[in-house]
Image (cartoon, rainbow, N blue to C red; front, side):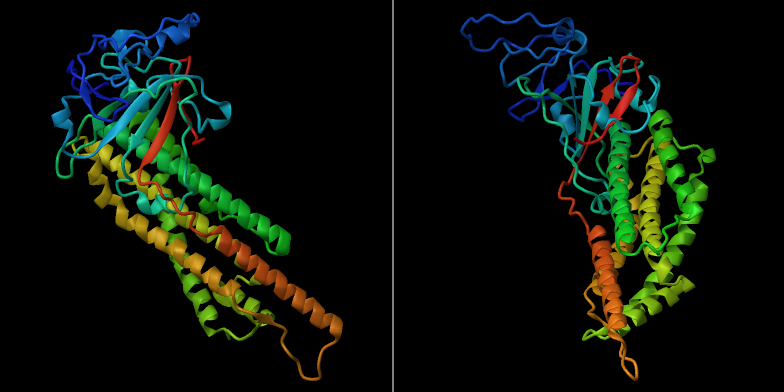
Length: 434
Protein backbone atom coordinates (compact mmCIF):
# COMPACT_ATOMS: atom_id res chain seq x y z
CA UNK A 1 0.00 0.00 0.00
CA UNK A 2 1.35 3.46 -0.88
CA UNK A 3 3.15 5.11 1.98
CA UNK A 4 3.52 1.92 4.01
CA UNK A 5 6.64 -0.15 4.83
CA UNK A 6 7.58 -2.53 2.03
CA UNK A 7 8.50 -5.30 4.44
CA UNK A 8 8.44 -8.68 2.69
CA UNK A 9 6.83 -10.17 5.78
CA UNK A 10 3.05 -10.37 5.89
CA UNK A 11 0.19 -10.79 8.30
CA UNK A 12 -2.62 -13.09 7.21
CA UNK A 13 -5.78 -13.97 9.08
CA UNK A 14 -6.33 -17.64 8.10
CA UNK A 15 -9.57 -19.53 8.41
CA UNK A 16 -8.48 -20.64 11.87
CA UNK A 17 -8.37 -17.03 13.02
CA UNK A 18 -4.68 -16.86 14.11
CA UNK A 19 -2.27 -14.51 12.34
CA UNK A 20 0.48 -16.27 10.44
CA UNK A 21 3.75 -15.07 8.93
CA UNK A 22 4.21 -15.95 5.28
CA UNK A 23 7.10 -14.73 3.14
CA UNK A 24 5.68 -12.85 0.19
CA UNK A 25 6.20 -14.61 -3.09
CA UNK A 26 6.25 -18.18 -1.70
CA UNK A 27 3.53 -20.75 -2.01
CA UNK A 28 1.90 -22.24 1.05
CA UNK A 29 2.92 -25.86 1.78
CA UNK A 30 0.77 -28.47 0.20
CA UNK A 31 -2.08 -29.89 2.25
CA UNK A 32 -3.07 -33.50 2.71
CA UNK A 33 -3.56 -35.48 -0.53
CA UNK A 34 -7.07 -35.53 -1.95
CA UNK A 35 -8.81 -37.97 -4.23
CA UNK A 36 -8.18 -37.11 -7.83
CA UNK A 37 -11.18 -35.68 -9.56
CA UNK A 38 -11.72 -33.82 -12.83
CA UNK A 39 -11.78 -30.07 -12.41
CA UNK A 40 -13.35 -27.67 -14.91
CA UNK A 41 -10.95 -25.32 -16.63
CA UNK A 42 -11.38 -21.88 -15.05
CA UNK A 43 -11.78 -18.73 -17.06
CA UNK A 44 -8.71 -16.48 -17.40
CA UNK A 45 -10.18 -14.03 -14.88
CA UNK A 46 -10.94 -16.78 -12.38
CA UNK A 47 -7.45 -18.21 -12.88
CA UNK A 48 -5.87 -14.85 -12.12
CA UNK A 49 -7.89 -14.48 -8.94
CA UNK A 50 -8.26 -18.09 -7.87
CA UNK A 51 -8.03 -19.24 -4.27
CA UNK A 52 -5.74 -22.26 -4.06
CA UNK A 53 -8.04 -25.14 -3.04
CA UNK A 54 -5.06 -27.52 -2.83
CA UNK A 55 -3.38 -25.48 -0.12
CA UNK A 56 -3.72 -26.26 3.56
CA UNK A 57 -7.04 -24.77 4.68
CA UNK A 58 -5.33 -23.16 7.67
CA UNK A 59 -3.22 -21.00 5.34
CA UNK A 60 -5.37 -19.79 2.42
CA UNK A 61 -3.64 -17.61 -0.18
CA UNK A 62 -5.46 -15.26 -2.56
CA UNK A 63 -3.73 -14.78 -5.88
CA UNK A 64 -4.52 -11.29 -7.12
CA UNK A 65 -2.98 -10.49 -10.50
CA UNK A 66 -0.28 -13.09 -9.95
CA UNK A 67 1.32 -14.64 -6.91
CA UNK A 68 3.65 -11.66 -6.45
CA UNK A 69 0.53 -9.60 -5.51
CA UNK A 70 -0.72 -11.75 -2.64
CA UNK A 71 -3.14 -10.14 -0.22
CA UNK A 72 -0.83 -10.63 2.70
CA UNK A 73 1.48 -7.82 1.53
CA UNK A 74 3.95 -6.43 4.02
CA UNK A 75 2.33 -4.98 7.11
CA UNK A 76 4.80 -6.07 9.77
CA UNK A 77 5.24 -9.00 12.12
CA UNK A 78 2.36 -10.33 14.24
CA UNK A 79 3.99 -9.09 17.45
CA UNK A 80 4.00 -5.58 15.97
CA UNK A 81 0.23 -5.77 15.53
CA UNK A 82 -0.52 -6.71 19.14
CA UNK A 83 -0.71 -3.16 20.50
CA UNK A 84 -3.76 -1.16 19.51
CA UNK A 85 -6.72 -1.78 17.20
CA UNK A 86 -6.41 -2.87 13.57
CA UNK A 87 -8.61 -3.11 10.51
CA UNK A 88 -9.03 -6.13 8.26
CA UNK A 89 -8.61 -5.74 4.52
CA UNK A 90 -9.69 -8.53 2.18
CA UNK A 91 -10.39 -8.78 -1.54
CA UNK A 92 -11.94 -11.24 -3.94
CA UNK A 93 -12.69 -11.14 -7.66
CA UNK A 94 -16.15 -10.00 -8.59
CA UNK A 95 -18.38 -7.51 -10.33
CA UNK A 96 -20.48 -5.14 -8.17
CA UNK A 97 -24.25 -5.17 -8.29
CA UNK A 98 -25.30 -1.90 -9.98
CA UNK A 99 -28.12 -1.58 -7.44
CA UNK A 100 -25.54 -1.35 -4.65
CA UNK A 101 -23.44 1.46 -6.14
CA UNK A 102 -23.24 4.49 -3.86
CA UNK A 103 -22.14 7.89 -5.08
CA UNK A 104 -20.06 8.68 -8.14
CA UNK A 105 -17.16 6.53 -9.27
CA UNK A 106 -13.89 7.74 -7.79
CA UNK A 107 -11.04 8.34 -10.26
CA UNK A 108 -8.02 6.05 -10.50
CA UNK A 109 -5.78 8.53 -8.72
CA UNK A 110 -8.09 9.09 -5.75
CA UNK A 111 -6.83 8.94 -2.18
CA UNK A 112 -8.88 5.82 -1.49
CA UNK A 113 -7.39 4.12 -4.58
CA UNK A 114 -3.87 4.93 -3.42
CA UNK A 115 -4.59 3.43 -0.01
CA UNK A 116 -5.89 0.20 -1.56
CA UNK A 117 -2.99 -0.20 -4.00
CA UNK A 118 -0.04 -2.55 -3.62
CA UNK A 119 3.31 -0.88 -2.83
CA UNK A 120 4.64 0.62 -6.04
CA UNK A 121 1.28 0.66 -7.85
CA UNK A 122 -0.81 3.76 -8.51
CA UNK A 123 -4.08 1.95 -7.81
CA UNK A 124 -5.69 -1.43 -7.22
CA UNK A 125 -6.10 -4.01 -9.95
CA UNK A 126 -9.52 -3.85 -11.70
CA UNK A 127 -12.14 -6.50 -11.06
CA UNK A 128 -11.79 -6.82 -7.30
CA UNK A 129 -14.24 -6.39 -4.45
CA UNK A 130 -12.51 -5.02 -1.35
CA UNK A 131 -13.92 -5.31 2.15
CA UNK A 132 -12.60 -3.06 4.94
CA UNK A 133 -13.70 -3.96 8.46
CA UNK A 134 -13.10 -1.72 11.47
CA UNK A 135 -13.45 -3.17 14.99
CA UNK A 136 -15.21 -0.10 16.45
CA UNK A 137 -16.66 3.30 15.60
CA UNK A 138 -13.74 5.36 17.00
CA UNK A 139 -16.08 8.06 18.32
CA UNK A 140 -18.75 7.82 15.62
CA UNK A 141 -20.95 5.50 17.73
CA UNK A 142 -23.53 8.20 18.67
CA UNK A 143 -24.18 8.81 14.96
CA UNK A 144 -24.19 5.11 14.11
CA UNK A 145 -26.78 4.41 16.80
CA UNK A 146 -29.18 6.67 14.89
CA UNK A 147 -28.80 4.46 11.82
CA UNK A 148 -30.38 1.27 10.57
CA UNK A 149 -27.94 -1.62 11.11
CA UNK A 150 -26.14 -2.56 7.91
CA UNK A 151 -25.10 -5.93 6.53
CA UNK A 152 -22.50 -6.91 3.97
CA UNK A 153 -22.72 -9.33 1.10
CA UNK A 154 -21.56 -12.86 1.97
CA UNK A 155 -18.79 -14.61 0.12
CA UNK A 156 -20.33 -16.32 -2.95
CA UNK A 157 -21.10 -20.02 -2.54
CA UNK A 158 -18.28 -22.29 -3.58
CA UNK A 159 -15.51 -19.83 -2.69
CA UNK A 160 -13.41 -19.92 0.44
CA UNK A 161 -13.46 -16.72 2.49
CA UNK A 162 -10.57 -14.56 1.29
CA UNK A 163 -7.62 -14.04 3.64
CA UNK A 164 -7.56 -10.71 5.42
CA UNK A 165 -4.53 -8.49 5.82
CA UNK A 166 -4.27 -6.93 9.27
CA UNK A 167 -3.48 -3.21 9.21
CA UNK A 168 -2.93 -1.45 12.53
CA UNK A 169 -4.64 1.92 12.85
CA UNK A 170 -2.50 3.04 15.78
CA UNK A 171 -2.79 2.75 19.53
CA UNK A 172 -4.13 5.68 21.58
CA UNK A 173 -1.32 8.11 22.28
CA UNK A 174 0.89 6.74 19.50
CA UNK A 175 1.56 8.03 16.01
CA UNK A 176 -0.09 7.15 12.71
CA UNK A 177 0.09 3.51 11.60
CA UNK A 178 -0.18 1.55 8.36
CA UNK A 179 -3.97 1.57 8.29
CA UNK A 180 -4.76 4.96 9.85
CA UNK A 181 -5.60 6.81 6.65
CA UNK A 182 -7.50 3.90 5.08
CA UNK A 183 -9.38 3.32 8.32
CA UNK A 184 -10.34 7.01 8.56
CA UNK A 185 -11.68 7.03 5.00
CA UNK A 186 -13.58 3.79 5.56
CA UNK A 187 -15.11 5.03 8.80
CA UNK A 188 -16.36 8.28 7.31
CA UNK A 189 -17.86 6.71 4.19
CA UNK A 190 -19.40 3.84 6.18
CA UNK A 191 -21.01 6.24 8.63
CA UNK A 192 -22.14 8.55 5.81
CA UNK A 193 -23.82 5.71 3.91
CA UNK A 194 -25.62 4.52 7.05
CA UNK A 195 -26.62 8.02 8.21
CA UNK A 196 -27.77 9.35 4.84
CA UNK A 197 -29.74 6.18 4.08
CA UNK A 198 -31.48 6.24 7.46
CA UNK A 199 -32.12 9.97 7.18
CA UNK A 200 -33.81 9.51 3.80
CA UNK A 201 -35.99 6.71 5.18
CA UNK A 202 -37.08 8.77 8.18
CA UNK A 203 -37.86 11.85 6.07
CA UNK A 204 -39.85 9.73 3.60
CA UNK A 205 -41.85 8.23 6.48
CA UNK A 206 -42.57 11.68 7.91
CA UNK A 207 -43.66 13.00 4.52
CA UNK A 208 -45.90 9.99 3.92
CA UNK A 209 -47.55 10.42 7.32
CA UNK A 210 -48.28 14.10 6.70
CA UNK A 211 -49.60 13.42 3.20
CA UNK A 212 -51.97 10.74 4.48
CA UNK A 213 -53.15 12.33 7.72
CA UNK A 214 -52.63 16.09 7.44
CA UNK A 215 -52.59 17.07 3.76
CA UNK A 216 -53.15 20.69 4.71
CA UNK A 217 -49.77 20.80 6.49
CA UNK A 218 -46.96 21.74 4.15
CA UNK A 219 -43.40 20.39 4.34
CA UNK A 220 -41.05 22.85 2.69
CA UNK A 221 -37.37 22.19 3.57
CA UNK A 222 -35.35 25.23 4.54
CA UNK A 223 -33.01 26.34 1.75
CA UNK A 224 -30.16 26.27 4.27
CA UNK A 225 -30.86 22.60 4.95
CA UNK A 226 -30.79 21.79 1.23
CA UNK A 227 -27.50 23.67 0.81
CA UNK A 228 -25.99 21.89 3.82
CA UNK A 229 -27.02 18.48 2.44
CA UNK A 230 -25.25 19.24 -0.83
CA UNK A 231 -22.16 20.54 0.97
CA UNK A 232 -21.89 17.41 3.13
CA UNK A 233 -22.12 15.13 0.09
CA UNK A 234 -19.49 17.12 -1.79
CA UNK A 235 -17.19 17.09 1.25
CA UNK A 236 -17.44 13.30 1.54
CA UNK A 237 -16.55 12.86 -2.12
CA UNK A 238 -13.66 15.30 -1.78
CA UNK A 239 -12.29 13.46 1.24
CA UNK A 240 -12.29 10.13 -0.62
CA UNK A 241 -10.81 11.68 -3.75
CA UNK A 242 -8.12 13.93 -2.25
CA UNK A 243 -7.74 12.97 1.41
CA UNK A 244 -8.69 16.50 2.50
CA UNK A 245 -11.70 18.81 2.31
CA UNK A 246 -11.06 22.10 0.54
CA UNK A 247 -12.22 25.42 1.93
CA UNK A 248 -14.32 26.19 -1.15
CA UNK A 249 -16.73 23.28 -0.78
CA UNK A 250 -19.28 25.05 1.37
CA UNK A 251 -18.82 22.95 4.51
CA UNK A 252 -17.91 26.00 6.61
CA UNK A 253 -21.06 27.81 5.49
CA UNK A 254 -23.07 24.68 6.18
CA UNK A 255 -21.60 24.52 9.71
CA UNK A 256 -22.69 28.11 10.42
CA UNK A 257 -26.20 27.56 9.05
CA UNK A 258 -26.69 24.26 10.86
CA UNK A 259 -25.61 25.89 14.12
CA UNK A 260 -28.34 28.50 13.70
CA UNK A 261 -30.90 25.80 12.88
CA UNK A 262 -29.88 23.76 15.91
CA UNK A 263 -30.44 26.70 18.24
CA UNK A 264 -33.84 27.24 16.64
CA UNK A 265 -34.67 23.55 17.05
CA UNK A 266 -33.76 23.67 20.73
CA UNK A 267 -36.05 26.67 21.20
CA UNK A 268 -38.91 24.85 19.47
CA UNK A 269 -38.32 21.72 21.54
CA UNK A 270 -38.42 23.70 24.78
CA UNK A 271 -41.73 25.28 23.76
CA UNK A 272 -43.31 22.00 22.64
CA UNK A 273 -42.18 20.31 25.85
CA UNK A 274 -43.92 23.01 27.89
CA UNK A 275 -47.13 22.35 25.95
CA UNK A 276 -46.85 18.60 26.57
CA UNK A 277 -46.13 19.10 30.27
CA UNK A 278 -49.17 21.36 30.69
CA UNK A 279 -51.58 19.00 28.93
CA UNK A 280 -54.11 17.10 31.03
CA UNK A 281 -53.18 13.39 30.90
CA UNK A 282 -56.81 12.50 31.59
CA UNK A 283 -58.03 14.22 28.44
CA UNK A 284 -56.87 17.23 26.44
CA UNK A 285 -59.04 19.07 23.91
CA UNK A 286 -57.50 18.31 20.53
CA UNK A 287 -58.17 21.77 19.12
CA UNK A 288 -56.40 23.38 22.10
CA UNK A 289 -53.36 21.10 21.76
CA UNK A 290 -53.02 21.86 18.06
CA UNK A 291 -53.35 25.57 18.70
CA UNK A 292 -50.75 25.57 21.49
CA UNK A 293 -48.23 23.56 19.47
CA UNK A 294 -48.69 25.99 16.59
CA UNK A 295 -48.06 28.98 18.88
CA UNK A 296 -44.47 27.83 19.44
CA UNK A 297 -42.40 29.78 16.95
CA UNK A 298 -45.63 31.19 15.49
CA UNK A 299 -45.65 28.26 13.07
CA UNK A 300 -49.34 27.40 13.32
CA UNK A 301 -50.48 23.79 13.46
CA UNK A 302 -50.01 23.60 9.68
CA UNK A 303 -46.30 24.32 10.18
CA UNK A 304 -45.72 21.87 13.06
CA UNK A 305 -45.08 18.69 10.99
CA UNK A 306 -42.72 20.57 8.68
CA UNK A 307 -40.84 21.92 11.69
CA UNK A 308 -40.35 18.38 13.04
CA UNK A 309 -39.18 17.26 9.58
CA UNK A 310 -36.67 20.12 9.33
CA UNK A 311 -35.45 19.75 12.92
CA UNK A 312 -34.60 16.07 12.48
CA UNK A 313 -32.88 16.66 9.14
CA UNK A 314 -30.77 19.54 10.47
CA UNK A 315 -29.63 17.56 13.52
CA UNK A 316 -28.53 14.50 11.54
CA UNK A 317 -26.89 16.68 8.89
CA UNK A 318 -24.92 18.47 11.59
CA UNK A 319 -23.74 15.14 13.00
CA UNK A 320 -22.61 14.01 9.55
CA UNK A 321 -20.83 17.33 9.05
CA UNK A 322 -19.05 17.02 12.41
CA UNK A 323 -17.64 13.58 11.59
CA UNK A 324 -16.33 14.72 8.21
CA UNK A 325 -14.68 17.78 9.72
CA UNK A 326 -12.97 15.73 12.43
CA UNK A 327 -11.75 13.15 9.89
CA UNK A 328 -10.34 15.94 7.70
CA UNK A 329 -8.49 17.35 10.72
CA UNK A 330 -7.05 13.93 11.56
CA UNK A 331 -5.87 13.25 8.00
CA UNK A 332 -4.30 16.68 7.67
CA UNK A 333 -2.23 16.15 10.80
CA UNK A 334 -0.66 13.04 9.25
CA UNK A 335 0.88 11.79 12.50
CA UNK A 336 -2.07 10.86 14.71
CA UNK A 337 -3.65 7.39 15.07
CA UNK A 338 -7.30 6.66 14.29
CA UNK A 339 -8.26 6.42 18.02
CA UNK A 340 -7.39 10.13 18.24
CA UNK A 341 -10.62 10.78 16.35
CA UNK A 342 -12.76 9.88 19.38
CA UNK A 343 -11.97 12.94 21.56
CA UNK A 344 -12.41 15.17 18.50
CA UNK A 345 -15.98 14.16 17.73
CA UNK A 346 -17.67 11.83 20.21
CA UNK A 347 -19.03 14.45 22.62
CA UNK A 348 -20.45 16.64 19.84
CA UNK A 349 -22.07 13.67 18.11
CA UNK A 350 -23.56 12.57 21.42
CA UNK A 351 -25.11 16.02 21.77
CA UNK A 352 -26.80 15.81 18.35
CA UNK A 353 -28.00 12.28 19.08
CA UNK A 354 -29.42 13.48 22.42
CA UNK A 355 -31.39 16.19 20.60
CA UNK A 356 -32.86 13.61 18.21
CA UNK A 357 -33.78 11.40 21.19
CA UNK A 358 -35.40 14.42 22.85
CA UNK A 359 -37.51 15.07 19.75
CA UNK A 360 -38.55 11.41 19.69
CA UNK A 361 -39.55 11.45 23.37
CA UNK A 362 -41.62 14.59 22.86
CA UNK A 363 -43.56 13.06 19.98
CA UNK A 364 -44.05 9.86 21.95
CA UNK A 365 -45.51 11.84 24.85
CA UNK A 366 -47.82 13.82 22.58
CA UNK A 367 -49.01 10.68 20.79
CA UNK A 368 -50.19 9.10 24.06
CA UNK A 369 -52.27 12.08 25.23
CA UNK A 370 -55.99 11.28 25.00
CA UNK A 371 -57.62 13.95 22.82
CA UNK A 372 -61.20 14.93 23.52
CA UNK A 373 -63.74 17.25 21.94
CA UNK A 374 -64.04 20.55 23.76
CA UNK A 375 -67.48 21.14 25.24
CA UNK A 376 -69.10 24.45 24.43
CA UNK A 377 -71.92 26.18 26.27
CA UNK A 378 -75.25 25.30 24.73
CA UNK A 379 -73.89 22.01 23.32
CA UNK A 380 -72.78 21.14 19.77
CA UNK A 381 -74.44 19.60 16.79
CA UNK A 382 -73.70 15.88 16.42
CA UNK A 383 -71.98 16.25 13.03
CA UNK A 384 -69.60 18.89 14.46
CA UNK A 385 -68.70 16.60 17.32
CA UNK A 386 -68.04 13.79 14.84
CA UNK A 387 -65.84 16.07 12.69
CA UNK A 388 -63.74 17.15 15.68
CA UNK A 389 -63.43 13.57 16.89
CA UNK A 390 -62.19 12.53 13.43
CA UNK A 391 -59.68 15.39 13.41
CA UNK A 392 -58.42 14.33 16.83
CA UNK A 393 -58.02 10.76 15.62
CA UNK A 394 -55.97 11.93 12.63
CA UNK A 395 -53.84 14.13 14.93
CA UNK A 396 -53.07 11.20 17.22
CA UNK A 397 -52.30 8.95 14.27
CA UNK A 398 -49.97 11.60 12.83
CA UNK A 399 -48.12 12.03 16.13
CA UNK A 400 -47.85 8.25 16.54
CA UNK A 401 -46.46 7.68 13.05
CA UNK A 402 -44.05 10.59 13.48
CA UNK A 403 -42.78 9.20 16.77
CA UNK A 404 -42.43 5.75 15.22
CA UNK A 405 -40.41 7.17 12.30
CA UNK A 406 -37.93 8.76 14.70
CA UNK A 407 -37.57 5.68 16.91
CA UNK A 408 -33.89 4.63 17.22
CA UNK A 409 -33.33 1.61 14.97
CA UNK A 410 -30.94 -0.02 17.43
CA UNK A 411 -27.49 -0.24 15.86
CA UNK A 412 -26.06 -3.35 17.47
CA UNK A 413 -22.78 -3.74 15.59
CA UNK A 414 -19.71 -2.38 17.30
CA UNK A 415 -17.75 -2.16 14.06
CA UNK A 416 -18.02 -0.65 10.61
CA UNK A 417 -17.66 -2.54 7.32
CA UNK A 418 -17.29 -0.91 3.91
CA UNK A 419 -17.11 -2.59 0.50
CA UNK A 420 -15.45 -1.03 -2.54
CA UNK A 421 -15.15 -2.34 -6.11
CA UNK A 422 -12.28 -1.60 -8.49
CA UNK A 423 -13.71 -0.84 -11.93
CA UNK A 424 -12.34 -1.70 -15.40
CA UNK A 425 -11.38 1.95 -15.89
CA UNK A 426 -9.12 1.82 -12.85
CA UNK A 427 -11.46 3.79 -10.61
CA UNK A 428 -13.30 2.76 -7.47
CA UNK A 429 -17.02 2.38 -6.74
CA UNK A 430 -18.20 2.45 -3.13
CA UNK A 431 -21.00 -0.06 -2.50
CA UNK A 432 -24.05 0.16 -0.27
CA UNK A 433 -24.56 -2.62 2.28
CA UNK A 434 -26.46 -5.54 0.84
